Every structure is written in structure tokens, then in C-alpha cells.
Amino acid sequence: MQCNKMNQLPMNYSAGRSTMKASSSITTTRTWAPCIIALLSLLHLQRHEMQPCHAFTLPCTPRTLSSLSSSTSLSSSTNSNILNPLKQGSTCALVTPFLPNGQIDEPSLRSLLKFHKDNNTQGLCVLGTTAEASLLSMQERRTVLEIVVSEVKNKIPILVGTGAINPNDVKSMTQQALDLGADANLVVTPPYIKPPQRALCKFFSDIADCGLPLVVYNVPGRTGVDFKPESIAAIADHELIVGVKEATGDLERVAQIRALTKEKLQSLNQNQLLLYSGDDATEAQFVLNGGDGCISVTANVAPLQMSQMMQYALESNTEEAMKINASLEKIHENIFVESNPIPAKWGLKRMRLISFAYCRPPLCELDKQYYELIEETLREGGITLD
Image (cartoon, rainbow, N blue to C red; front, top):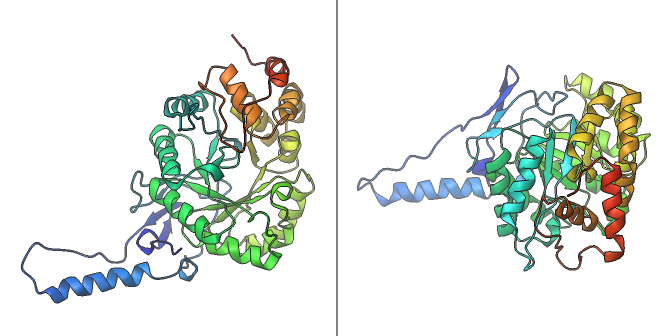
């Protein structure tokens, strides 16, 4: 797959703002001009479309602590022309609600998005593992993205999962996310095939070249490969690699990544990568250790508590952060009593935020033996149930 070069225009950064500008345009007229003009225009367009994604380079871009210092105008996006910076704090790994026939439950999706707007969620990660994205078609991904953009664009930053084994599929999904108004993409190390570190470095750099700010997702428990801190440091100077989601549960990773990237990024006048925890059980300590936030499954059912906990952790208020974390520990644990997102969906249904707890095969709904456990867990976490 080749990225659409008409959607990848040079970024000119000025006063903290990055604006996409076309260097040229193709003007068509409704006159009886010679056919050769139309032919030359077509050839010009084809020349742009045939350039491979990795051939495109961007000028060096200062990265702020919030990924990019301010909004970036994307004149080529079809549904939105603003690229909003990712934030520190709590990002929810959002589920995709389905009807019992397996179709996307659009009203429930809108209900969830309103729930997060009302409860101070700092970011939304859609079409990731928790969203059952590997079971969605490109048209279904479009449906989800269009709804998300229409409901929360310019209110909550939109991080879109675009990971897959095949880099061409990753590029196709990244291009779609860019076109539809996503603010950044989350790209997992290709699962199952275990690429060596040098191949992973090239993979992430090539995907970042497609023009959308990228967060690296390292979850060796699912993929079978660990993207090492040294490898993260090797690609940290790419202006569109803006963060890392670390789901190893290894709290030492924060200090390791910071130490390996600090001098390199300072020499380029770039601030540090955003570091997100992807492990609910350790995310409070992760941020207290110097991380920037979390991408959380727990935040599906407890967004306000997660937002407050992250804020305290970012302020180095250990006592208050750990106090909230203690109240959420059972959720952190039991929301994974069966494969994610099975318990989370059942919990959301019990909270009357979605209509059905349906998960697409090969997943299924929560086993009845866990109903009481999840109910008790939600109540212990301060969640009121009817």
C-alpha cells in the first residue's frame, strides 16, 4: 500500500502552530482546452500517488510535552481540518459497542462518547485491542471514526489504533485515520512474527512518514516481541513519533527511556516523548515515576476517577493518587477476569451506558459465573448501579 501523497503536505511550524500547505494546486477549467492539458494533469497526479510512503520526509518539528505544541491544520482531511495535540492524563481504550447481530451499535457509541466528555477524560483511544478492531472491516472502521470525529473532535484528542501484521494494512488504516480527522495513531509492534529490533525501527519510521503523529505500542504479552528502550531511543528523533504506550508492567522503563532519549532530543530542541502506561495495575506508579499518563481499560467504567488519579500523579501527589488507585484496584484486576473487552462490556451494559455486551467471535459475552463479581467490583470502585 502506498500513502496518498496528496494528503501528505509539508508542515510549516510557526509560533507553536503547524500548518499544512500545498506547494501547488491543479486547476481545471470547463473550456475546450486541448486534450493534452488534461493528460498532463493526470500524469502529474499519478506521479504524486505512486511515491512510496517511506520516500516522504518532513522537516524537523519541535515536539512539546503535549506531543505538538498546538493544533495543526490539515487542509486535506475530509471531515476535520484540525490536528489536536495529545495530552497527559487518562486516555480511555474505548470499547466498540455492538448489536446482538454483530452490527455497530451507533447510539451506544454516541452514549459512551458523551459519558467521556462529561467525565473529564483527557484522550480517547479508539479502534484498538479493546475495541475489537482486528474484527472490523475498513468500512466499519470508517463508521466508528466518523461518529467519534463528529462527537468529540476538538474536545478530546482522538488516538486511533492502526496496528496489524502487514505494514501495507497499517498504512491503509493510517491513511484512513488521517483523512477522517484523527489526531494521532497508535501502532503496535506487528504481532506473532517477532521482527528483530532493526526491522521494528524501520517499520515505525515508515509508518510515521505517512504524516500522522504516532504513538508506539509495546505489549510483548500479546505480540511476542518486546520493543526495547534502546530501539525506542533510536527512532525518538522522528518528528512524528510522539509517544510510547508501555504495557510491559515494568516500572523501570520510564527512567530507561528518559535516560536514553534525553540528550538526543535536547540536541534537536525537541521535548521528551509522551510515555503512557498500558498496564492498569501499575499506571499510577508509572506516572509517579515520571510517565505522562495511561491508556486504560479501567477508564471505560471509571473515567472520572482515572482522570483524577492521573492528575494527582502528574502533580507528584503520591498520597492522593494512591488513595484513588486503592479504590480501583479490584477493577484493575477483575476487568480482566476474562479476555478484554468481555468484562468491560458487561460492566458498561450493567451501568446502562451500552445496550448490549455482545463481543464478536471468536470472543463471546461474559460467563454468568462472573456477573456478581463484576457488580461487586464496580460498587467497590465507587460506581453506582441501579
